[in-house]
Image 1 (cartoon, rainbow over the protein chains, first blue to last red):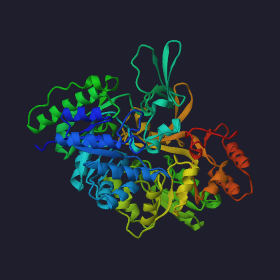
Image 2 (spheres, chains in turn orange, cyan):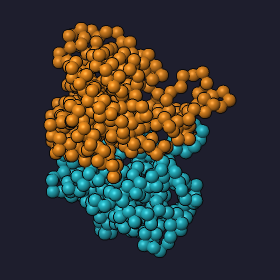
Image 3 (tube, rainbow over the protein chains, first blue to last red):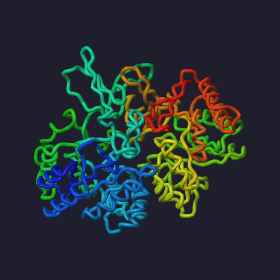
Image 4 (spheres, rainbow over the protein chains, first blue to last red):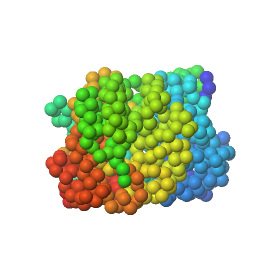
Length: 332
Length: 295
């Protein structure tokens, strides 16, 4: 069986080296500004760090993909254009882009730099994907996390581009790149500033017997002090609703869970997927190392026709709980 | 400045849709009306006839009519719906790039607020592709809209109604009712303006509308029209709600024409729906939920 490519997160140069050493076929990273969707303090790469990271990866047979996957806001477009040019100069193997204006710029001015379509573009069907492939020469599409495995297989039969799917880590339940919940509460969002539910807007407040998690002054969670505390990502919050006359509190959008599609690798391979993506550029080097080596063993076993090694990743999921997201048809 | 009535985002019964647009045709001072189902393809069989009848009535009343595509088409049927709409002869409002694959190179079209047109380069690309008007994402501020309008491509600003904040493959109305999307039994019909989602402390925050998440507060720029006018925006978008949309449109029209001032427009709109919370934070470059007017 054709071997699946493992695309791994690198929030820092140390994480890049850890991912490559653990067996990543490719790593993805971004510059330290709002041109990428993990614009968090202390994360990401300078131009010099990217060049060094590319050299390290290439010497070990791994590729480097640069995420320039946010949407330029008025007056700031030059920053995105410079990022594309600098990614090519650093020797990156591809740029992961989302914005139509940036795609058009890259296709026209940096045609030799391979173009991938970011999940932030949320291209969720063959027509949208073929539009990007035909108009901007996009060679690979990172699929939004709203599709079932059967839908992914159907997409692959109709498109002239590779597909990459998320298999592990944080899980957006909204169509990526089309969610402004964070800016409604905080003024910052993935599309406006490259960050969702930013830590600067988080407050942990103690009440009599409870710990209250707030984002932008809005309560997202209240739990006993000794209970494990999730990070207050907006769509994983607990809210109150009233339906049919009955009020209740629940995780309206999604429970605080991570995606773990490890057991679906054979199905995803059969669906024609080219690459598997691990989320987590904000994660530690140790986490990256553990997840990448585990998935590399699984990918190698699958390619060799061996049974998958027993999973050891449950402990790394948010709150210890994992879901297969939309891949199983349970959302429908 | 012109007024656009955006597409109905909620699941209303067909007769309510017919009554609503009959009144808009007869009495609302809006220039363009966007029809069609944009949120959930499962609703389309129930409202398609009503939208087609409304198109006829609105056109006869001198309104420009366009139909919106679905905002998140994934299934084969949803793609076919998108392609069929583009071929229908109606002016198309693109709610997802899927429609661009079907639009002939020389066909004019509109771009809705759920397509990511955040920067000048992207706006120029859409203008060159044939976009007649681009409704900017509601997250953008008036200052940013001014930079966009300076490109010369006609822009529209989200000016009234719950802000469309997110789309998902999962239906939250169905999830809350313990159902899957396929077996939803159209539970969203019970909430003609969306289902309120409060914080556990009881603070109003969001509203769900099937696969869509909206703000709980209604965006309302009636008190900020001087800045909007100075920005060079060509059109304002009013999003349909269950209240008196004719009166809302009249208040915006009167304020734009200088017959009433901003505070008077705000007071009139507030009086239509006592207790309603409004927001103008995005327009001022702040968090969206903020409201800077007294009313």
